[in-house]
Every structure is written in structure tokens, then in C-alpha cells.
Length: 335
Ligand code: SAM
Image: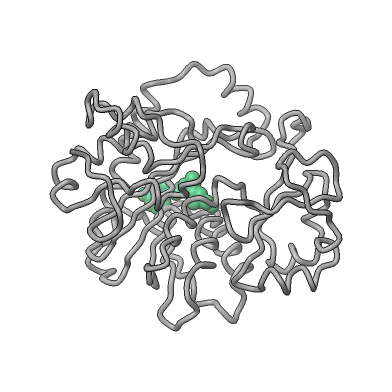
């Protein structure tokens, strides 16, 4: 695209793919990265510097003009370009030291950034697996290519891809799945710059908020999440979008928390301390009043189970994630 550099952030994020290497080995093997000078701000002024992220392990930022995609590390799949906020779901799903997730699901997987990130957290045992579902036939090909590149032949069983509609799966067929990532299609209103075609960007900037469209998307997002919450052994489900609109974010979460079947099965919103607690931007607390009325503290606690990233300001795309938990994980009751 011919998007100008004004539409970019001053940082480009990449993660070291720990399925294929370790950070120590990676920097030893690749002088291109080892020679970069560490900086402590995400506002990288010029090539030659590297930022190590405080929130996501093995995530780094460099200047967008750095020739990352022609490095041998990138070509070998040891580097995966992924926006920081888009790394939140896999990290939230796997960031509990007491978790022994060996079977997890990525319900809406293509192109596979979160799938490969989830896989990087799994213990390398025979039965460790990410089941990845994608319903679009073209996108499933991209997903396969990305997963093959990220896992290599040695770990080829770590990700199992199925070309199907996730809502058509039978949860009872996955009795050992303990966690799910649900990252469904959304309005994409948090995306800008390189990640979006010029025409689309202009269209989006002109666009008034189309409430009808957002509500339609929210209906689909609710449906797919409700299905995810049916898996018999699931204890943690992370919902995410790259939308900035509350319709697709907090409002979907509130509808899920108020659904009588979901309530009855014991799902709640996680407490802040298990959802990247140090990240300052949380859900919008005023959106939770349908549940907690005027109780400020309770609204704030519910909002704490969600994280938000503001486009550009937070060094990348706009993003939202919420973490649902069941039973023993620290949780926030909706009432
Ligand atoms: N998680 C991906 C990543 O991080 O690389 C991005 C996912 S994208 C926002 C949403 C994807 O979900 C699209 O590829 C879309 O085709 C797929 N999708 C939408 N509805 C689905 C469904 N019911 N079952 C499976 N895949 C679905």
C-alpha cells in the first residue's frame, strides 16, 4: 500500500518464536538483532535500536524502517511480526503458573498469529496441542502456511488445523480442552496504517458509527463466545477484538455475564490480577452499570477483567480483551 509513514507507529513489534529457538540462542545466532542498542521507550526515533517489552515475554520493538522481513531469522520463522496488544490473548490464557494447559482452542484462527503464540506457551509433551478452527477456505491456507513455518517439522503436531465453522463443533468431542481464545471477525475499527488498505482507511475515517452493523457483529460475537463457554473442561476463555467500539467489546461481555445459562454454568469475569494487571488501560467501567448499578467499586472490578489498547497511542492497533474464568481461578462475580 502507499500508506505514508504518518500512519505508522514509531515502533514495529516482533516476537522471538520460542517454538523454534530461545531468546539467548536467537540473539547469539543473529548479529542483525544482537547489534541493536537497547532503548527504554516505545517511541523509537531511528533504526539501530531495540525495545524489550515489559508486558509480553519475548516481544521486542524496532524502528519500522529496519529491514526485518529480509533477515534469515524472519525467513526461518524464528521471528513473528505481531502487534503488542494482539499478543495479549495468548499471554492472558497462559499466564497462570498453576495452569497446566495442554489442550487449548483457537476458535477463529487465520492468519494464525494468536495460534502460533498460544502454541509457544505449551509444554512440549506429546499431548500438547492447539486446535485451530477457521471457516474461510482462503484464509485457512494462509493459516496452514503460517503454522508450518512457525512450528517446523519437529513440532508439527503442536497445532491441529480444522477448516470448519467453530460453532458447528461439538464441545463434548474436546473433553481435555482447558482454555480457548476467541478472536472473531469484528469491525476492525482499531486498525490503521500498514495493516489496512488505504481505501479502507479513508472509508473508515469518514464512516459515522454504523450502530446497526456493530450490533449485527456483536450478535455474532456473542454467539461464538457462548459456544466457547460450553466446552466441558474449559476454565479460561479469552475474548478479543481489534475494535474500539464498546458495542463489540464491553457490551458483548456484559450480555454474556447476564445470560442465564452462562451464569448458571459458573462463568465469571477474571479479576485484574490475572489479566496483565500492570497494563493501565482497562475496560470502560461505565459500560458495566447494567450489572453493578451505581456501585463504582464493583464496576471498576469488572472493568479490571478487561484490557484495552488505544490505536497509535499505545504503539499499535486498538484492541480489547476480556478474560472469563470458571471455578478455581480468581474471579469477579457479576452480582
Ligand atoms: N486470531 C487471528 C490472528 O490473530 O491471526 C485473527 C482472527 S480474524 C480477527 C477472525 C477470523 O475468524 C477470520 O479469519 C474469519 O474467517 C474467522 N471466523 C469467523 N467466524 C468464524 C467461525 N464461526 N468459525 C471459524 N472461524 C471463523
